[in-house]
Image: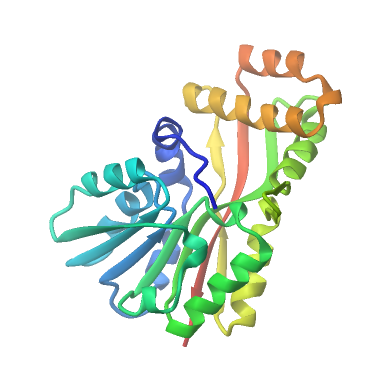
Length: 255
């Protein structure tokens, strides 16, 4: 699986991610969490959100395919009692041996980029090592706007199909990821708890809202070129709407 995100985009979304994640799931983590493996860590934003909520000492294993992002992640965990090691590689190749010393496996905005088989494999690896999983911000495929426009639902449907596209022979889960992950982890024997973790965008976050709109509409237009969305996007950018962008957080615990 190849990386898809720039450090600029990841930095822009970090405050919205932090505000959206379901913090109550952290309080449900079992036992003492000391070693955390963060899959597809990007710039390390999940670590910066989660580390202050866990006891120290902590050791983070940051895993990603992008060496530049790994370097950034390792250099930006500014917490006493927290150490970091990087692991360059494909998260879909994770094994139970990789989690032998882990107390928790995490990821953020990753599951929708996987296939159903890859999520099932991930659940099986976590089950084999009895490692709990906290997976945040999986796209849910639900967007609401204030004010609404007639084209909104059509654009949403095209975007969701784009998220389910086939890339290199891999059919991505997109907005089907939350349900697929729940089913996979429950089949693997986990107790699964989910929470809504929707982004709240709007004029108070103008840079992120505008960039998200460009990406959302651009993906829809790529999926369905006949929609001709230039005027729609222009109108949305001229007067930024408030938008709720659905995501789901998932906690899986093996007894």
